[in-house]
Length: 391
Image (cartoon, rainbow, N blue to C red; front, side, top):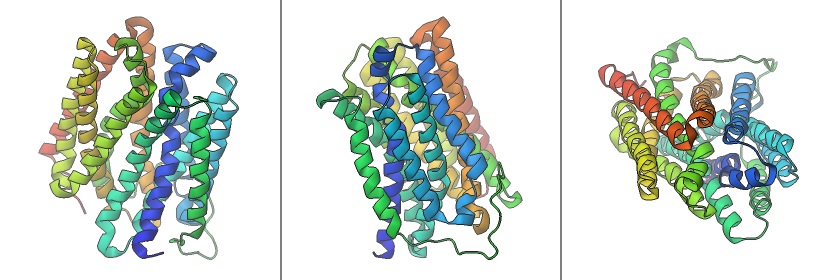
């Protein structure tokens, strides 16, 4: 396998792993009909996933720096397989919670280890492209999960089984690829102890990390909305019950994010960070308008615009953090960055679920859009006035 092939293969493994974390998104309506639970419970199930991600990042965020990238990737793929089995055997909320928690463990390991592996497997001349490959694999995988599940659930048999069987087949292929990838972390003798280090942000990184984390928090809040609650908006508020359409809407926000990440290379980090936040604000305006107008096209355009802004800001943030992080702490620093992002993807969404009890889906969505609009606008203006150092 060529040097280019190795980092692209690692990106493919990353994408397959992340696809499993969003696979249930279009299926929550079917689970609600089958089991019977409220919109708040949907967001709680989603929050269990985010809790698993954050716990893994805090406890094991630096383990791949010690054990190596390949063992961490194999463990992540193992958690993904166990999660899929939980959904295949699902007979109520307990296995839904277990499946989402295991999926969170997998995503937590992938976030730091896979990103670092893709960057380190790339030749020095392709390091910039590798950065795009890593972030595109992350967002592209997240987007392909709902697209795959929605299409299979709508047009194929076994809507609550076939998506997970298909993902298991992809995971087996990813395991085989991971086994032949070279290790990029040199063995140290004696091996440093495996100790939870929490939020590891070296002092020399903090000037970049703070604004990058704020931008990631704002962007991932929008991603959380589309991953956890948008299917209910589409079905109940907009009256569209085709699961494939739901998958396309969710896919569009992640696809646009990938496009935004590609554009970041042309725009540059210093402009993409504030610019992405302000474009994100525009997307949130459209999302709010779609709920007022009950318009699926406006919601889809809002998803594209918001995803584009999130992608610009996200890749710029990750690029700036990984560029200044010391090699011995790169995995842990990237993991800390994702902790901030996943706090943004979880807490606001649970708030939306709670608000639905008093305001309904439309009211809760409008409150959410307004709050994140204020946040993203404030972060964008702050970054325009005080651009972060990039290296």
